[in-house]
Image 1 (cartoon, rainbow, N blue to C red):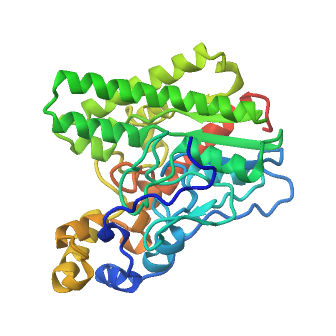
Image 2: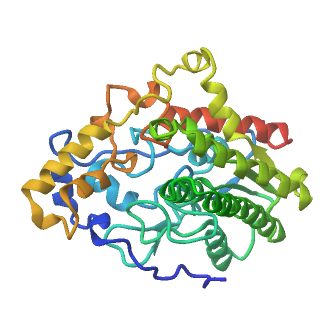
Length: 386
């Protein structure tokens, strides 16, 4: 087990950290001025909409990240989270927290010019790029994102335990799946490698159930566990060589193992299991997405990633001193993420409310809000609040 305090992990290549904010901002100047962004707000009523006041704690990856990298990204790009980052923008964990009268903020500041994470004071321990138990994490701008098991250990080191007033939200697995899929693709679909990577995905799911056990053993009584969405049905999945088939199969393998491990451990009735896989897939059936208010489903992104990348690449070509060993193309690609997106960078005005996906895999503000409503319904069905 790692130290209770987040260790100083080896940083990714310097170009991924994009340490010079003012220069990196200029790379996107063709699209928008820097600054802006937004976050969840505290409910104005003293009585929470959810009917009960709860203190929310979250663990997970970019889908749940309350702003680990916002200290840098928001100030320099107007982004800050892995979504569309408009005024009032939030991820599902923050929406759920607000429903029960709480404001969820990040527990740590990480990435970019930092050589080690710093305390941000919140209870949102989820970090973009995090895997269930392993390092390195996935993607820029992580030092190497803190795994979910270590996130929990860090919480317990600081707060010692959970109590009956805590609502604990936990999800993970997508980044383990991305690594497995990339490894399989690099092998050309070698049968031995496929077997090894499927086993790795199954181990990640079993480990996540073990993490839930740790939560229960340390006093958590209200736990929401979210499974993996159908990653093959994301824009990134559809754009892959096989149209997302492998990512869908790995998502299914993770979820089947997760459900089985919960049953085997006798934890099925001790958590609220939310099926993100079916939630997303059901929206893509027939006119469901249109009925929910979406004009664009999984065929395009709300953030203009192509223009973001092109502008940053061109700036890198004109200003090679900022590249720190990267090529202009690598520099441009590192900025083509919803983390750096803001309303000025939308594909079309109001895209955060009419598109399902901000970038290749991350939900827009609206999709996060709809998923939060599903979570709230299941919490109420479990006898908590309304």
